[in-house]
Length: 80
Picture 1 (cartoon, rainbow, N blue to C red):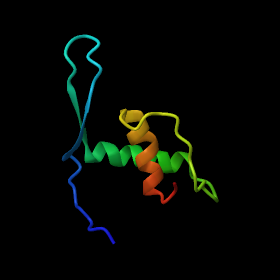
Picture 2 (picture 1 turned 45 degrees about the vertical axis):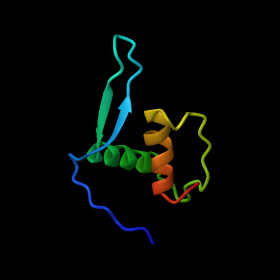
Picture 3 (picture 1 turned 180 degrees about the vertical axis):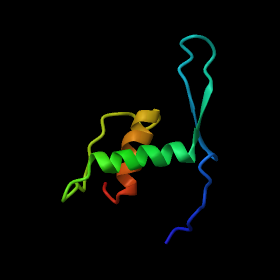
Picture 4 (picture 1 turned 60 degrees about the vertical axis):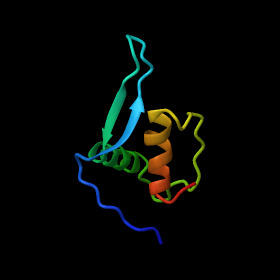
């Protein structure tokens, strides 16, 4: 079993770069608290008697939406 890592809610755990449409690309800092809120909302949105065990994502995982809104919450629920 993997070792559990404890994070504080204000700890920075990701840096995703912006596209730089208004200038130089910048690193957007994502905290553990933000990720936990996103994942909790995903679980509440998909709360059914029998949640799906497989998901299909057409979003790229290098983008914040594909990674944090789809892939990570799905994996946290034990789905594939």
